[in-house]
Structures are given as C-alpha cells and as structure tokens.
Length: 331
Image (cartoon, rainbow, N blue to C red; front, side):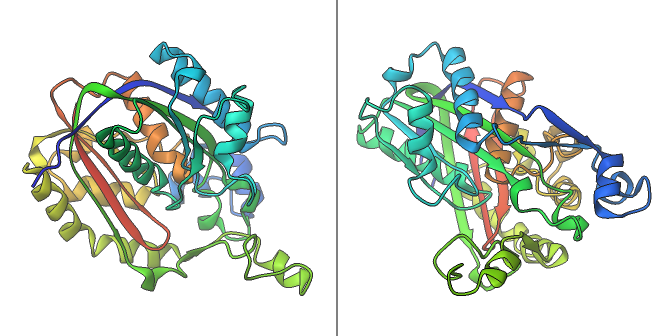
C-alpha cells in the first residue's frame, strides 16, 4: 500500500572540488597502461578535494546554493540533517560543523547526522518526511559531502578510480506538490566485509597498534562480490518497491540512481524497461560520490528539467552493508 507522503523540493545545490584528475593521471596513479582507466572502468575524470575543501565547507557551499534557489534564509530552517557516507570527524557530527559554517552556531536549529553509507540520503529523506507528517518541521535541509580520496589506495584500481569527491544539499518543505508513493530499504549484513573502512572507530586503537591502525585506514572493496550480492537481490527488491507504489516499471519517467559503478548502472538499465533513456548517468565525469551520489544526481536531474510535474521518478541505489534502497515519487 502506498504511503503518499507529500513534500516540496524547494531547492538543490551542488559543489565539486576545484581539482580535476583526468583519466590519464589516474592511469599513472594506479600504475596501469595508458588508456586503461577509461577503457576498463568507464572513467574520464574525478574531482579531488584540497585541504581547505573540507566536508563541512563543501556541504555549506552546496547548502547556500540550495537555500538561494528555495528563496529561504538559513534561519528559517527547522532542521539540518547531514547524510554523509564518512563523517568529517567522529565527534561532533558533521551536521553540527555545517550548522556553524552556515552562521547558525547560536541558532538552536536541530542538526544531526544519519548514516547508511551510500544510502544515507535516502534514510535522511525518510526521516524528514516522517518529521513533516508528525508536524515536527516545516522546512528541512539535507546535506551530503564526501571526500573519498582521503582513504583511497591506488594500488587497488577498482577500489579507487570509481570514487570522486563532492557535496550536495536538498531543501525540502512540508507543503509541496510531490508525493512519495513508496520507500523500501533492506540490509543483508552477511556482506558487511565486502566494502569496509575499518579504522577511525573504536575497534582499532592507534595507542595499541599504530601500524595496524594505519593499515586499515584505507578503503577496501570486493567489487565482484558487491555486484553479485546486490544484483541477485535486485529483481525482488524492485518488484516489492514498485508493488508498494502500485505502479509498473514502464510507468517511470526518470530514474535517479546512486552512481556506484559502470557495471551497476548497466545492470540497472537492463533490469527496467526503457531505463537506458530514463537513467541519469554522471558516472564517467563525477563517479561514485558515496552518500553524496544520490542527492547530487537528484540535483542534476532537477537542473536539467528531468523531474517533470505529475510524472513518476525513482531514487535507487545500494550501499556497503550490503543494503538496497529506493523510493518512488510522483513529481
């Protein structure tokens, strides 16, 4: 049964770091023959954040653009939710740092983080709609910013060249024309070791074994394992999501996916009727921005006029864990 939660997408903003690495530079970094990164992975360029382009700084830049488009002042917000794949620092949360950078450090506006790695935005979106339905908030800002390059190991090309750095922000209001018809989120923890960044939490302690801590400070990924774990569950997941929304895949007019990898996007196109023309594909130049990927792609689709009033759209993706998530929206 559809949940029909209403909202307005009032503004969207994005930020990409100043520095761009071309595929030829990534060939050199990974030690691959010239042309290999573009040929094997479908990558033409990737953005890399400079030291001054921190997660909270990039998120605040995107937030400023989103609020400007919405025509809102920062102090009119009721809540700020940070939906990053990796926090800027463990404590305090990134949302607090973004709030301060937005000049709201004395405002009392609630600011907190949610995390579901690459699907963090989808969970934040769900929390915002719940807050609207409960009458908690009228205006909400979701920010996402990820600096994948901070933990990439170029000796593993697949676990490095897929990823880029960037930020996005989405301004949502409780009074709007859009309707979320259904949302589904499922996690299969047996795949927890397929994508991992093990240092930085409480399990590995630098004061006990610094070498081990540093060794596990790089991102590790079993690409084929992740693809298999998600692809084999995707058909039933999509059937359940579309069924909950009461629509057929052919009814969709725009598909906004997490830009996981070239094989993941190709599998999506093969799985849904007409998806080749409907899918927003930013992978070659922007790549997998971790949790920023979904809101960044959504903001791009909005800018390109692909979110047509009254038509049906799909937000969909996968994340480390392994999880699958998606939402069907009538724009």
